[in-house]
Amino acid sequence: MADEQKPGGPDTPAPAEGGGAKPPAKPTAPAKPAAAAGHAAPPKPPATMAATPWESDLAKELKERFGDGIAEASTYLGQNFIVAKGDAAIPVLEYLKLEADFDYLVDITAVDWPKRAERFDLVYILYSFARNERVRVKAYIAEGYKPESAVGVHLTSNWLEREVFDMFGIEFAGHPDMRRILLPEEWQGYPLRKDYGIIQQDDRWVRENLGIESGQ
Image (tube, rainbow, N blue to C red; front, side):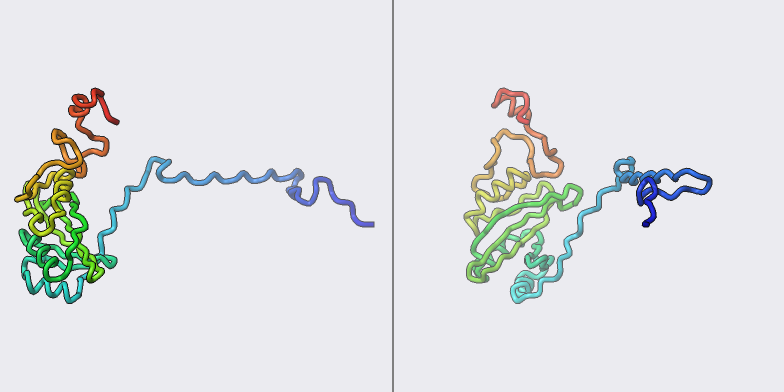
């Protein structure tokens, strides 16, 4: 005859010496994350753009043509760009259009670096249908500097430069109609500057024209 099963079943803890069963161990509480404990780690700085030298016939051609007017010719993730010094940007745009078939001005934009002496990156994005290729021309400009308008090279820069003025406050010398294009003329400030708060607005304009205290 088989042995009878002891009370409590097979999962019952074995009796400890001296009698009685050991109570099950309490589960260990998971450690609190650093943020919950009031010790949040500082955010990591953004990764630096790891550009490499742009070695091509066109880059060589531009360096030979403009010399010191070209500060840099680089590429990043397949995106080729040059950095033009001073007033060389417009001659470079004209050369790329007439001599290298970059006849489509895709966009003009800017990047704001408030703590840098040359506060803005001014960026022209060009495309060549003949080459099926894109290139960017950058210029570093200081606060208050008025770069030459590109309207004489690309008519489409008219509205694009007005948008850069509207959002960043960069005025273009020689532009035929330098005024805002998205915001009302009376608007104060330039929304894409880093020192323009994300919920900042021209409260005075909102009150006077919309009759409310806040547009938020």
